[in-house]
Image (cartoon, rainbow, N blue to C red; front, side, top):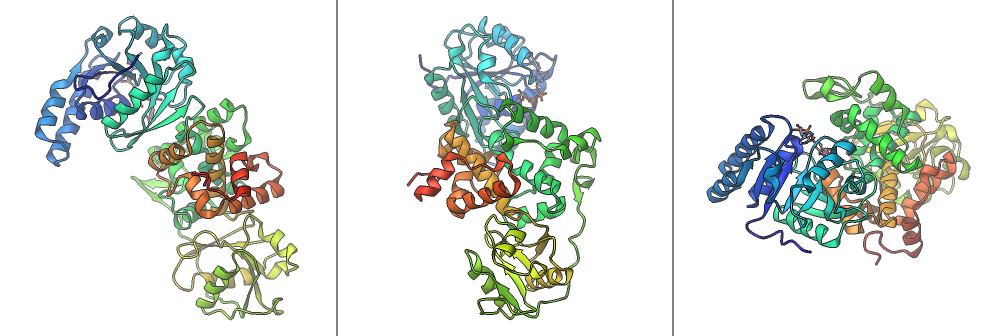
Length: 505
Ligand code: NAI
């Protein structure tokens, strides 16, 4: 069987015309497909049609849609009076309530109406496509077609094969996605598919950092935006999605992977959810909101003090940190060992400040760590160990902000904040590749378009250096003993062979 999804007379049915259904209807209509809207709530499909026409008219006003395309799209958008009106569809996409039994009932109902070669696609974000399809007489024509909210702006869609799905189905949906101006990525039917799986590292590792007392939420957000380049901090993001959505998703993916430690949720969000601190929509989450604006506590005051002299420990990050310290006007010692009063600066990869000070035989009271990998030019991270004296800490802080670039001071952590969070994201991305859930290229495309990260996990790992990511993870594993940080075989092999995580070259 086959379907030419580019045929001019393609008819698409949309069942469930809420936030997602109407978004999919909009891009389908704009691409010249005829669209039939059906919803179980009286009047909902008509409301959705009005909404879509309004959105398309706006696009036409802005010159983003021609008058002819607007007119064709408007004429092609029909409100179905019931399921029977879907009989002529080539593709039906369901975007009804996220409930397996309700979706399975719908599948049975649809199969009694549409032809045998009609594709039935589900926009489910968390259910198994295979389990939905299993209700069908013909599960081979059922696939996942997972869009993101808001559909017209989020230009990526996951095309998901169930266990029984035939290849022509995903091929046709891939063509249809492109016709609608979206970037299709192909995923196996696994919990979270690509985007919601790859997104596990960011929030959970940030919660782990806060849970370990490394830094407070505002500091973690500031570092990850300023040093690693994320558009939103993890806690800002949790506040935006709201804990009543994101905490259950964290639990669900963790459980669906049979308690995989990499995805372990945090008691912090469970407690805050119980307290009703959902996020922006309730006016209080990790931050307090005035309207849409978060009231973030101001960064801690910057001390005036400076070190008498600075000694930077040899190692991977030595040159970058020593050059910076000299540029900031510090007297950088050249000796093999620090002088008696010098501030000792280590620049470790993955190692915490305590371990680095002990390994190098430094006085921990005078030792701080500076992250050499992330943010030296944009937002520096200074890390103390439990014995670092307050005067040395303040002198380091004062020095590393003296050119106006911010710096945050955090407590001891293997991999500071940014190294650690980026390593967790790269490791999970590598494991998605290892499990062949998607190709490396599609993983990176899905993550950049679906999550807006500054880079896909595999390209990011390549940029930092796979061996450095391995070093960070191994140090975390050694210090904590937590299998959450075990290195994915994909990453370990490519780091050992010295080849790219993304291309294998
Ligand atoms: P929504 O609540 O805005 O819309 C659902 C619509 O389906 C409502 O209009 C409702 O009346 C209708 N409906 C419910 N049961 C029905 C049935 N048996 N037959 C016909 N119509 C029915 O929900 P939303 O957010 O649009 O989500 C829809 C689907 O898309 C869910 O599976 C959800 O998991 C998935 N999804 C949602 C995303 C989001 O950010 N909202 C993102 C990606 C996927």
